[in-house]
Image (tube, rainbow, N blue to C red):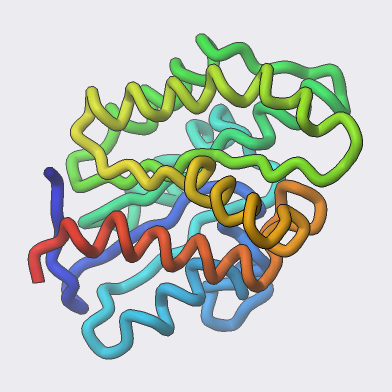
Length: 205
């Protein structure tokens, strides 16, 4: 299992879409107010340097376009990727689908460029609105891509779709994401807790 040491000499980059972004581009600390900020606060003095490279609206191909400048330039010790829900969403709101094959091809470009530890967070959906359950037809093949690539590339997989779904069954999906996609404060707390559970249990301290 890939691992990192939690120390200030290391750099962890979180890459993704709005779920990661969370206002980081207008935050003086560059962290936003989502799960990346929660992890920064949780890790305290032992934290590595944390970089939030999320941009709202991004799909996998958008990450490819900015990977060198926004991720590789930081010389990361670990890169955590959460991408895919916009690849699903655009099929339904703009009739602009991303095939599983195209999604996988873009994701492979991201992973092939890395020479560090990697965390793959599943894109997730917590259906709240009418019709969102139908998105599963598009999301599930992309989830399989992420899970396959985690095994192939030796990455740590954070099963966010599975685990948030379990929590939603108990407390209701809207408690975690009011629109089914963008996490609430409780949803971001849950994401941070899952990241810690699946990643920090596998790091060298």
